[in-house]
Length: 212
Ligand SMILES: C[S@@+](CC[C@H](N)C(=O)[O-])C[C@H]1O[C@@H](n2cnc3c(N)ncnc32)[C@H](O)[C@@H]1O
Image (cartoon, rainbow, N blue to C red; front, side, top):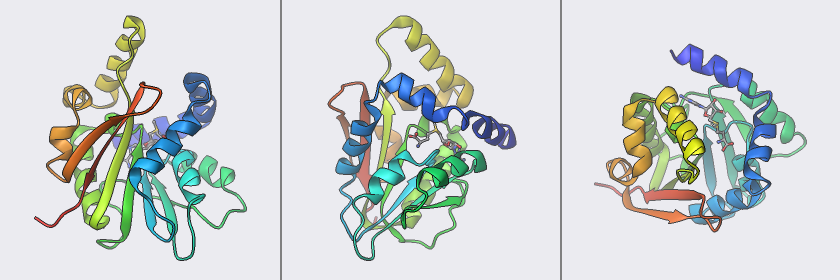
């Protein structure tokens, strides 16, 4: 099943950026800035962008890096990463690595921030939970995990397609998660909050790693 998903994303990577540009009508850049702002990422810190796709969030975050700071983007699709590396050609950061969210190749407490944009709904429930546990492990104490997703569309046809996407890419447990992510995120992180982007069509959910 995972092999099929990876193959799907490898194919999708060829048109991904064009689809996003069409879909978001150029608001995606301001959304990425909103995500980075809410992540509380500071120059000199280390940020990990999981399910980085073609690297849009990692490349935006890299603009804030100073000194020892670092941005790493990981994805399990070599196709997506090929596009990400091409977009970041000539830049010192970000680095892009092939990795599954279920087994991140980093030591515990390596990052100040973990971001995940428009991917949590596409993971199976098991992968999402294994991933959340990994995000917690690689975050430093006091570090922030932040995810961004679309809010359910208002048009009934688009809402139908949105629900089909949730059901086919994940499972029925994803519908519940999409309606309110906070209960599940609270199992891994503290002080969990939800905020809407200025466009009103996207939201971020974030929490902090505290010792329990
Ligand atoms: C919809 S794209 C989002 C890409 C990017 N974050 C963005 O906002 O444009 C979802 C990404 O999640 C990646 N992905 C899905 N399952 C994964 C897994 N188990 N481990 C790592 N990456 C995964 C896919 O390869 C794909 O690039």
